[in-house]
Image (cartoon, rainbow, N blue to C red; front, side, top):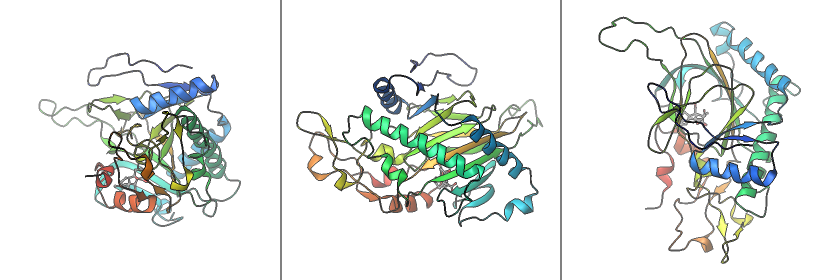
Length: 336
Ligand code: GA4
């Protein structure tokens, strides 16, 4: 298993660096340390030997392409669980627009037909998310290893699946002399994901870019055999607990207190491609609405003050959905 050090490989417009790759078949304690390092440095890493069967991914992708190939009127009828369902170009409720059509699904078994390709995919990817959260807890030396994954396994977990279809957009050069004619369009604008963790798989078409701390954009090389993992806002806000000896302990009665800013919620965006359409399938692992994200009071010290005010996922989600896509949401909950 390798977490590559950032080597500059070069591209004309962007700083291309090799992003961390974690091989889940490696030694467990090394894997957990590497995941923590990747979450701290990038909030983003690639997972190989992830254990999600190839045929489950292939069936899900095929169904997704079949769905988007349907006539517009038929797609629009899909309203499985309001406000989820089919959408085209409009993102969220605040006027954000992108060159994308999508299907947003609630992962609750109530909404997904049992034994469908979608339910098999959700189950397999949820397992992967839980395994990664357990590895994070191990890497953070939290004694209760399933403290994070329990939130996702909860029957009330507010997790989503999003299928994003970015149609190929030919580059039109109207005025070769003035404006650049080779610019890809924005499929999904810059943002971070509000949930705990995102597990993303896309076909062999590029377009995803992540932002580094200094604001530089790094294109993510497509690799359909792997999954990409994003740290979400909640995982950045949550804190973990140190006892007097510096050993990490965790008090479940306060509900998750994860990383208090140690992990970074990565900002990312997707551009369209000129020659082939891109399909990405994202699983957003979220806690139950009433899960309280807070730092235990006895852990707040002058040297390690809590960065964020306590909030529930329902409160955070409400605030997030009332903002524009690119707005910083955690900022609303920061301590003065
Ligand atoms: C980003 C992550 C998920 O795709 C999503 C998005 C949601 C939407 O498309 O409706 C949001 C966006 C996402 C964050 C801010 C709000 C809500 C669009 C938007 C402007 C489904 C989610 O949970 O948050």
